Image (cartoon, rainbow, N blue to C red):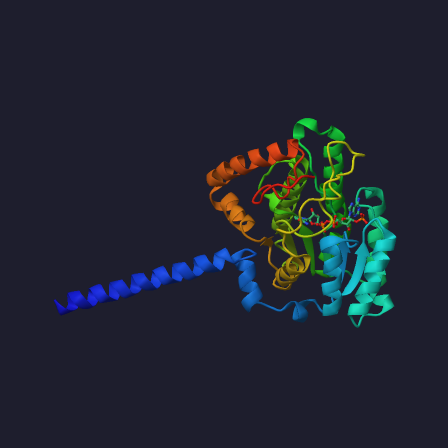
Length: 341
Ligand SMILES: NC(=O)c1ccc[n+]([C@@H]2O[C@H](COP(=O)([O-])OP(=O)(O)OC[C@H]3O[C@@H](n4cnc5c(N)ncnc54)[C@H](OP(=O)(O)O)[C@@H]3O)[C@@H](O)[C@H]2O)c1
């Protein structure tokens, strides 16, 4: 009987320990703002300062939003920068701000205007970038635009533009830089995809398709580079982050701007998103999900329980489409009361 009692007590302790462990993990998940591998790397992995200081990093889409913040945080870590986007004046502004926040000097930051849609220019621009610092350690494919329109209303030219910019522009630039990295045997290509690169939601059929295409491209490319262990292919999948993305989104017609900039209140701060990206880069993570709740839960459902994800997306998506058609702010309509445009 004594052995039996001891066994029962041990069993009770073990199961209450497991229950406590599960509870702790659940609470941690409720407050998580990135996938658990990335958060583990943030707590116990290599520090961005140790791994990224002195690296040459080429950032596309550096004139605003996530790319601009990347430039600031990398500059303060001591990385050398090549800043690209279409608006040269904005890139110069970002460069000045980087110099003010860091010990970098004028020659340590190259402003290199680039239109991702003009693929014919990419080879020459990449050569200029490589020549300036003698090499490139990291290419961050960040430039891109989103979409706010329903498929039924959207012209084919909008789909062409989204694929041209987000997908073909990105792989064109990657193909210009990759041979250089292969030759050196070292390098990193970091591509900013999106949660929409593996999930789906209304108003973004073309945007999501272009990001799915990127994920497919880079997942395959990674497998082709297994003989080059010094090269890391990394994709970043942010959820909603504060930036100019909604204001710059394509609508149903190519020339029509998106007048509704949406609610930014519920979004992750740009600085937190970038800080997590840098942790992922420092630790050579292949994929990063960076998102606050409940969007992070949504990511896990899409990955591990798609039937539940589809049911949830159907329910929320219907509301989102109804709000968009009614002229309400579609961006805040998932989890908060929609505001009028
Ligand atoms: N913010 C979010 O919620 C979110 C979520 C998931 C993924 N993302 C992704 O994050 C990346 C950065 O977006 P963001 O949120 O920072 O938006 P953003 O503030 O609108 O920045 C977009 C950047 O892309 C550049 N760009 C646009 N068209 C270009 C072109 N034809 N050629 C070269 N550069 C071009 C813009 O510069 P110019 O206008 O000067 O060319 C700008 O620097 C995008 O790939 C986006 O899909 C954002």
